[in-house]
Length: 524
Image 1 (cartoon, rainbow, N blue to C red):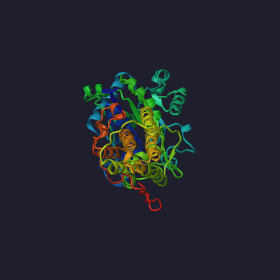
Image 2: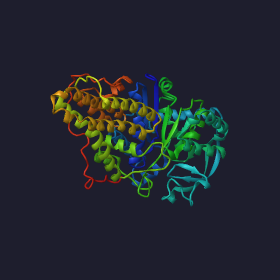
Image 3: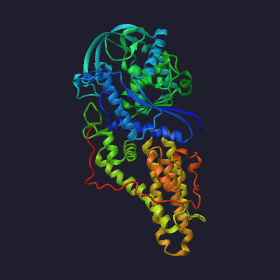
Image 4: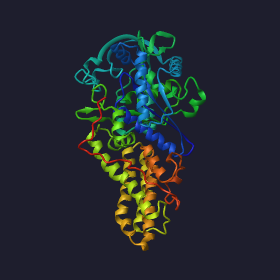
């Protein structure tokens, strides 16, 4: 609904090392969602950022012989650099070392304490340094964390006195939540996993670590720091003012969608809602857990060393193309890991972008220059092909919007490219280059090209959330403003291009790749 607020977040990333392609994947999906809702007239706030209070950051800094602050500053800057290179249109890049976050976390914890949801006890058990999470024996595979199977040294046995959060107190309330709101966690497979944990029963969880030199001090107990996962989750409220700016917080909260990876649903779909209940804060509307990228023998991750540098990838294929290639070939809602490779990117780039969209832009504008003097022709009626293309455009808009609103970006992009393919087929059917040889065919030539121009205009508007620079370039060639500013749904209505508007053909949007020589981006 135009004017309605929409608040979307990504997970915040550990800054113990540089970003990888999988970080760009999540940010690109969340950015596409934010842009989609902005374009539809909603008042959007998009939060992303970095998780900087982790013990692993302190360990990484010591290994490099630098201060922890220097390390997190360095890597946070690299994540910001990736966001800029990928066109991530965040409204705030939060760092969990930000003073307002620290203050908000301590206020949040004080609310638990006031509610008698925190107590002191001794914990002894297994801890995964990579996950920064405590583990039960049955969660391990051959004694190793299933998320970090190549790092047996990550599993440590700890015994220390910590503050505990009464998670078990909220077990029934969480069951009630999922009974009343089954779409709180999606996709369904991820929700079923969460429900399985819930049915097995919840234990109270440690919310502090003791005698660490790095982290947010636990309120009134400076020998403890807030356990990093709880500190990190609270960024979703501190990022919009909790504890420091009540008016801003009231404007944006609750969050409409938390976009996260599928490996952190336990924290987001059990711990986080219970934490909010204990602090008397309204729950978010939804948590969407996307799948992983895989290459070769395993998923892309820093811990495995199986990495692609997102900056090198943006340079190799272009940032807009990279966003498209990932979101098209790695469905956000897919349960299994989505395989990706440079060869796969090259093939999709040539088929969809160079031969598909790029060809449509180039041929349409060149024919308008050649046969219509470089201005939009006046159509006098529609033939069968034009009527079919008009109907296809209407269908593509509806199919796209239905899919995009559910974060099914691969389906949304497929709907857009059905219109790209339809427009190219339309030219094969009408063959304006042949008709133009006879001046008596001016009317069918005008009808054919006008329909192609309108299809191209609508494609540019639909593709803007995914490839904003490309969409802006197409609109400039059509003599139109950016799709970002176009009023919706009027911009999707067929027939808006005014006859007589001048158009200009530009250089190819997507020069075809020579597959034999296309370079692979450097590993991260």
